Amino acid sequence: MSGGKTYDAVVVGAGVFGAWTALALARRSRSVLLVEAYGPGHSRSSSGDESRIIRMGYGTDEIYTRWSQRSLTLWKELFRARHREALFQQTGVLWLAEPGNAALRATAEVLARCAVEFSEPDRAWLTKNYPQINFDGIGSAIYEPQSGVLLARRAVAAAVEEALRLGADYQVAEVLAPGGCGRMPHIRTGGGDAVKAVEFVFACGAWLGKMFPDILGERIFPTRQEVFYMGVPAGNEQFSPPWLPTFLFKTDESYGVPNLESRGLKIALDRHGPPVDPDTQSRIVRPQEADQIREYVAYRFPALREAPIVETRVCQYENTSSGDFLIDRHPEMSNVWFVGGGSGHGFKHGPAAGEYLAEQLLDGPRPHERFALKSKEKVQKRAVF
Ligand SMILES: Cc1cc2nc3c(=O)[nH]c(=O)nc-3n(C[C@H](O)[C@H](O)[C@H](O)COP(=O)(O)OP(=O)(O)OC[C@H]3O[C@@H](n4cnc5c(N)ncnc54)[C@H](O)[C@@H]3O)c2cc1C
Image (cartoon, rainbow, N blue to C red; front, top):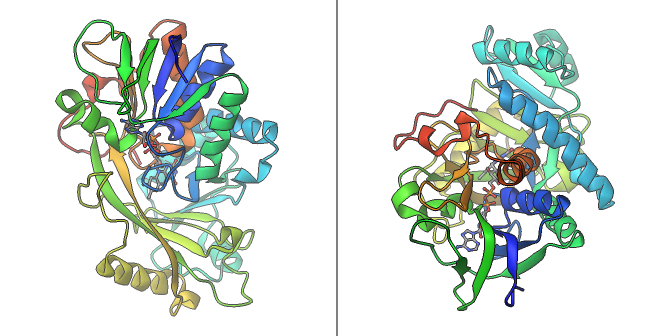
């Protein structure tokens, strides 16, 4: 807790971006307080599910390929330090699309340039190795053998634990929306505390628009996303690693994670749902979405035609206009920073984002224009996948 202390930095929000920002600052020997309203990786946060994919492919967007590479190294180092190696599951990641898909072609070029290990299996190889998948319409594929899955909410907790081990403080409190201009002296919590710091980082995920309604209210678009876990047939290992990798059907806008920790095959559509409020949206899936997923699973995984839905999650993407992250300084408060806009693909990048923000704070700002506030528009035109 704060007392009369002035921290080097207060980080608001212990999702993946806030946790790794606090950790990056603590690693650079700065005094940090991490303040979180509900708890690291809680069920209403975007970081709160069991698993998140980490893959290197990003079409032409090489910056994200490089950030994924850097982040996977940092995730593995963290898990090794915490003796939690199993929080990364190297399932491999399989991209699937129609013949001649431009995004997969671009992905292959960038992966080659960045020295990422990958192969481009043909249809005969796919059918032989993954008989549980219906490859109708699929004619291009990329396989990343080193990529896989982060066990998300526990991975965030591990980053927070490591930050605390290095001296960071942690407080459960709701931070009230700040106002004014110039240098902000302190934040205020719902409990009436005022906490002083030199720099303030707001890593509030889908809540960023509520915290800064004038600036971000129309630039962060929280959308409802529903995720399903399908029960696999008894005695059947075809849907578990190594028999099934993590997969992304570009053509169908779907993705999934194999049966990890016996929770079932995780599957979801990567399409933006309706706009939502992250505090109040219902966390119960809608019957029509469940029917759509059942139908889709029956088509791509015929052996799961009768599979029951054994778990569900309802969460939100916190989209920017393009899908590029928002990591920038507040335009009117010189010691206030935003990190967010993960846009459905941010989890894997937590380590690189934390490292980047720490560099901006401590080594002088050299902002990348893709992360700049001025590049964030008020109309959604998703370009990063
Ligand atoms: C269904 C789904 C699937 C996804 N799949 C992938 C994937 O496979 N791979 C991938 O890389 N990414 C994926 N993502 C995206 C990724 O999960 C998010 O981009 C990332 O988790 C965002 O992290 P965050 O820290 O910005 O936000 P959050 O995790 O939401 O954290 C924000 C935190 O701020 C706290 N907070 C907010 N306001 C306040 C306040 N006033 N006071 C105190 N605390 C506050 C909240 O309680 C919350 O804990 C997916 C997202 C969803 C929803």
